[in-house]
Length: 210
Length: 210
Image (cartoon, rainbow over all chains, first blue to last red; front, side, top):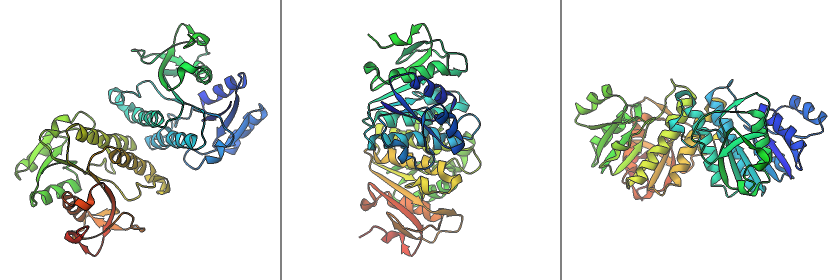
């Protein structure tokens, strides 16, 4: 499948592009600025320009699947949380419906199921993720929502813990998150499901395999 | 009807309580802090405590209608826009369904139908209002969404301009907004409709009357 990676220039996004390059799938990197293009082009990765705050319809031509790995990040205000994490995701979901995309994977966050129970400064973020998740669930798309715990820059282990609810908080490396997103693309038992993930003991290729 | 006014301590909210006191309806003022109670109690207005960021279920007992006139205001950050204008409204809609409320009027904003077309610094606010509006439309409640232009503190004129789309921007006094909200409670032709309002030439009692 040709897989549009939204947020390809982010930390998880870059790792995800690498994982997809090594897979049966073909990544297409969606980036906002022209100066973000060369790094992908030079690595032989198809790149499209698209701004989540604008119109990114043209990024969808020829796309079979979408992985939304964008986030407004910690250096912008909560207005961007609304515009990127919530509304950017919702627009990307609506476009996926319009283009008949076969598979949509949304990188969400642990805690997005119960935003009100989250830490004070995180609630608006968790609500934004929650609204995007709900929009995807109601979209009719073949979806998977992935909710990691705290993200680290540790090297990936290829092992995770995954369940609908893990009933604890913890960490997971961005590399393992990226590998999980790529892996779940073609796992039938992941379809139309929502999962929490943390670092763990299960080899990724055994996750949801049986 | 007993009408729960959410955001009763706000500028529009206070005016709305006054208008409802002079009407066939009975206002119930929902306020966040105990120190906001006496001003209403002394005026003979029933008051309930309820925090939009917390659990305000108990405010709904014995309520026939709800008017949501709360807003996070210009002095708080966009995180509060999510928590109050969007999520507070959504929670209040869900509670209205749960309690079988007969009528729900939401004070929205002109521009909430097309947030992406709004001014840069307003987009996150317009998106938040948009999500609340959409949630209400899909709620099954008997609703009216009211979208005023720029709010002024001018005295009310009792005359407005109202239509699904007015195709222009302009101002309207908070007093006329409050009077419109109170008026539309019992106007059958306002049910399950969305209106923009501005200052205008039509006497309120003739609006949607024929």
